[in-house]
Every structure is written in structure tokens, then in C-alpha cells.
Image 1 (spheres, rainbow, N blue to C red):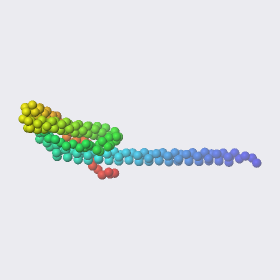
Image 2: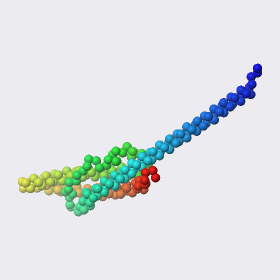
Image 3: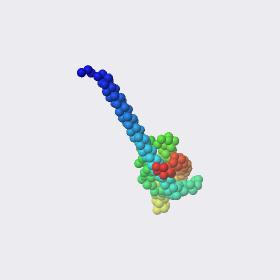
Image 4: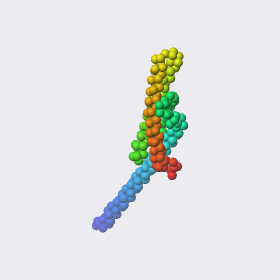
Length: 203
């Protein structure tokens, strides 16, 4: 019985072609699967970042409204030569959203928006520290003034006057910092709204 090379060649060719076709579609399937996974990952990332930006917007807007209704209005009304002789109670953490999601800030695509967020929160935290220092000056002034009223000793009046003068000088710094912070908050809220944070999630 003779060997049929034609049949053998056809079988080999068919197997090779079949393998190539199978491999091609397997590769296409893998590529499509990878593409779908990447698109899904990109979509999830975009939703995550948008959610963070919405939360930052709400936090800044809410904290700023509360601040303006309380201490911000007082600072705006301070005349030259006056002190902010008022104790401002401070929470341990005004910025829970920012502090809890700081690791995501670097993943915000817009460089300008990312820088504006960091700049605004840095100024806001600095303002909190400034109020803590002012509170300390108020406490020292009130303590010296109280002792003077009780003792009527000149030295305590001098101490009270010195502390009050420090408050007057520090009020100038507070007003400048307050003005700068108001501007940066306005810039940030405008940038966030321009970025679409007020749109419904998923829209």
C-alpha cells in the first residue's frame, strides 16, 4: 500500500491553518478581554476621582460657609488697630475628606486642579493654626487682665497691655491670611464646578 502524500499534505495544511485560525481568534479574544478590562478600570478610576472631587467640593463649601458665618465675618469687620480678642473653639479635624483621601490627590488628571486643591487646603490648615495661636494670645491677655483686676498691680496691667498689643499686630496677619484664603477657596470651587462635580454621578 503506497503512502498518499497528497492526503497527508492536505491534513497537515489543514491542521496548521486550523491552528492559526484558532490562535488568531484566541489572541483577538484575549486582546478584547484586556481592552474591556482596561476600559472598565479606567471607568472605575474616573468614577472614584469624581466622587472624591465631589466630596472635596462639599467639604470646602460647607466648612467655608460655617467659617464665614462665625469667625470670617468677625475678621472682615476688624478695623485697623483693633484686635481679635475672641476665643475661637476649634475642632480637631475640619478636613476629614481631604485627610482621608490625600493618597488619591496625586491621581487627579488635571495638574492645575490638583495644585489648586493642595494650595487651598494648605492655606486653610495654616489659618486653623493661626487661630490656635490667636487663641493662645487671647488666653494670655485675659489671664493678665484678670490678675490686674484682682490685684491692681501695675506690672499685671503692663502684661495685659503687651498681650493686647500682640493681638492687634497679629490681627493684621489674620486679615491678610483670611483674604488670601477666601480668594483661593473661590478659585477652587470655581475650578471644581468647571470640572463637572455638580453633575449627577454617572452622568
